[in-house]
Structures are given as C-alpha cells and as structure tokens.
Image (cartoon, rainbow, N blue to C red; front, side, top):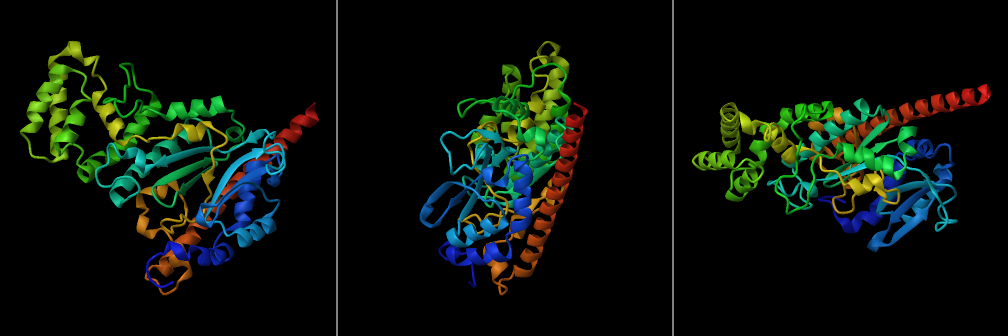
Length: 399
C-alpha cells in the first residue's frame, strides 16, 4: 500500500477501514435519532459495490447488522436515504416516506462559470474558499432564521460539502416546506444564457442578505486576487453584462480596459466610478441601488442543488464514506473551522491504513478529531430528542 492512492486496491483496504476506522456505533446512534420515532430498520441505505454494482433499499436493525453488511458487501460507497413506514426492502413500491433530514448539497462544479483556478472535478485551496463562504452563510441562516441547532457538515470527499439538519421539525418537513427553505436560501437565479442572475430589488435588504454580504466581504478581495474574475477579455465582458445601466456600463468598460489586468484594481476603480455615477445621476440610482451587492452575490453566494433539498428520494453520501476516485474520507467538520480546513489535511484510506505514508500520523489524528466532532453533534441530537419525547409524553398526560 506504499505510495499514492490506487483505486484498484480499494476492495482490499475497505474491510480493514470499516472495522478499524468507520465509527459504526456513533453512526448507528445518529441514524436512530434521524429515524425516531420509527425504528432504525425503516431507514434506507444504499451500497455501491465494485464495478459500479448498485444496491438500494437495504436496511439494518442495529450495529451488528451494519458490521455484517460491511464485511459481506464491502461497499465502495455508502449512501443514506429516507425513513419509511416499513422496512424499505419489504414494500418498496407501496411504502411511504415519513421523515428525512433536511439536506443541502453544494458542489464546486456549479461554480465553474465563475471559478478560474479549476474546472469540473478538480479542486484546489483557492476554490475551496467558495465552500467556506457557503458553509458560513447557510449554517448561520439555518440557526438564526429557522432556529435549527442539530446541523452536521460533511466534506463530500472530492469537490463539495453536504449539510444534514437533524432537528425533528426539519426531518418531518414535507416537500413544499423543504422547497420553501431552499428557495429562501437561493439568490442566484437563471440558466447559462442569463448574464445577470441576481436581483435584490430596490427596497431595504433583508437581514439575511445583509448577513450573507458581511460574510462575503470577509473573503471577496482575497477571492478576487485568487480567481482574477475580470483579468481576461471574457471575464471582463461577463462582468460588464451584469451592469443594467447602459451609460454606467459604457463608462466602466472604457475605464477598466485602460487599467492593468488586476481584478482587484479593476474592482476598486469600478466601485469609485459607481459611487460617482450614483451621486451625479440620482434618477438612475433606484435601478442600480444594490448593483455592487448583486455582483458580489453572483460571484460568491452559495449555489445550491435545490432538487436535492426538495426531494425525499435523493440519496446522499454518508459521513465517513470513502470517495472511490480520491480515496478521501467524507469527514465531518465544524463550520467555524471551514476556513482553516485544507484539502491536503483530509485523511485518505491509504494514509490511515499505511503507517509508512508521510501524512499517516497527522491524518489519523485528523480522523479522530472528525469522529469527535461527529460525536458532539450526535450527543446534542440525542439530548434534543430526549427532551422532545418527554415534552410529547407530558402533553399526552395532560389530555
């Protein structure tokens, strides 16, 4: 196993990983809370085996059954589905979905229209900052605006992050309710052919939008320097198309084309030009009142896969699953630590099982830290569930 990760060796490594490193006990406790008041056996699990053999509608009753399945099937990928009114394997066509965590899936491929450092499956420390912003904005909104507390953040293993909201109120939301939450968090609208995808109107900005902009502002100039959004002709043209006022767009184009290609310098000159233009053209201000904010949002605000959040049938990769292509563990992390998180620090199955690799000790410690964070989330969820059941019992007694 010495050397770089080899996908061909995954089948040999996984049995040992599932036995030694996968936190089976705390994982089952998390699933139990997410199923409550239904039994664990009503939760759907899905395995992707070697050669892309796909198994759905699996279920377990306890940790022992999970361990047996792991050793028997050796899944290359583990996905989690909804909670049904019966075991999903028994009546998959007639079963009814009763609950599912409120989930969010954010993938860096959805940033390909703005990120310049990488494309498609490639990810680097520069574009990871988009994930940092997304994590901070969504976590804050879920807690402050919706009152959710039991939130789990997981690195996908390659190019994105997943968010699981396990509060009871979130788990039992119907599809329209999930859609309403997703729509509330979406500010970027429109397809590939739409140039300006953000319109914040001309009324006072909602508190949640101002809060999101405060988070974006912490990173915006840094990302400008990393991504150089406006340094190329194509990048500059895309930027100019976001300016709805013809005169301001024309003035901006003339000004910026004469400047060096530095996106930061071009941005700062645009801000100066915009402020002057607004002072001198009061009649136009209403139309472009929040133009600067709209541009920041279009480049940096989270891009959510809304269908994942709205639907119940979409499976989502389990925490601590191994990504087959990278060998990286889908580690749990704290949203407050997202900024410090480096992709090179994420444990791989190779580094965990092979003590001779350079990163082995550090990655094993990082794995322990991730499991500890997972435990903290599960303990908090168990406490919340106990309080909820007690409150429900007291209400029943009153009747």
